[in-house]
Length: 503
Image (cartoon, rainbow, N blue to C red; front, side, top):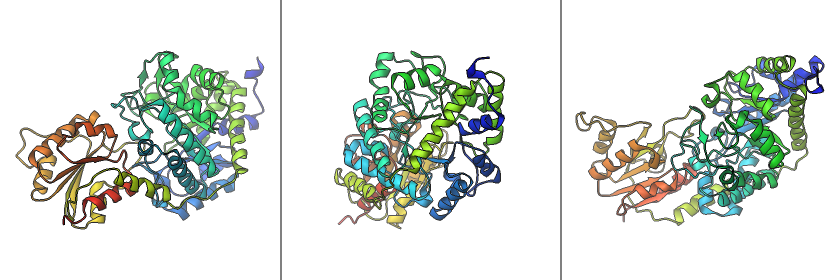
């Protein structure tokens, strides 16, 4: 038996196995099972919307977890835009990465990241699972879109570095993702396994450039992608030793913590169990195997990793190495200087610039708003119901409807009875605001936009709330603007402009 597979003492192995896991949980207080797992060495915990009611509650939750073990790492996805797991605890939500890239002010990106990260720090969260440094080179991408700073490696690299610097100013850890890059896919890894067939030279020039830059800037953690890069391996990056150890560690020189994306995604579980995926990812070089579902069982997952070591599948030294990296990160974070936030000044500045840089007609206080938006996603929840909510808050005489997911125009329906037909009828005699989100990749949305413009040709405005490439599908004679993401502060500023008096 080699040293790599030599069985360590049971207590040490159990603790190392637990230390290589990051898990989610249900509820707004720490379950007893989770507290026991933390005390027994669990590496990290990830929070989601389901765990958040308000700032005092989140602070109490993180304090309760750290009372079990002070060096626990507590993480949250916090990229900006429409989706914010911290919404009830955060009055100044982070701008979308795409609008920051469009404004292209590195100081503003850095300040935005610092403000957001300082909020996390004040709540006891010390790992910000951001920025997304995927280069959104494929407009058909169903999962990245405005989560990316833009469409070129150079721009994403610059803003990724500024974002990491801002997070570090707040004194917590940053996590560029999704390695080696999730930008050139047309498949959602939550549902199936994407493949990227670029050459190594192309991947090196585009996907890897932002990771090189952010690693040089001191990225603490890198998150893997559930994407197959065929030039390197036939396994997704999360399970690929060639990519995690060979490319990320040895070629790019990353010495921090590698975390997987959530292993319960179907890109992974379509062909293996979550438990087997956890073992395979650690074998490949991950230091934290992420199981983000609320039903995650850290004790059972720990036992599976221990079993893999004892049966010779997983080297004990690899588990010990992974746990040690996580503990080193926690120790480093404990000694960092925490600088305060900026009281929402960055997102207010973003909103002001978005408004000032475009033209918004005065529609008066009673527009009808048709919000054509993407369907709800299993990975997150929007922190507002849609644009009608925002418009009616600004102008109580406004009204509207949110149409998510697939809304076909029915050829055999009685006129006005389908959802879009009803919206046309409700908008009669009123100014009409049509919002579209990533319509360039969404056929039903393009059809709905065309129908709405044909049936309500006057006193209409189109607001592109997703990727700004949507602007190209709006007829040239229709007034339009872009927000490059769905941040509530930005949208409120636009609603104020559009609902101002007509004279």
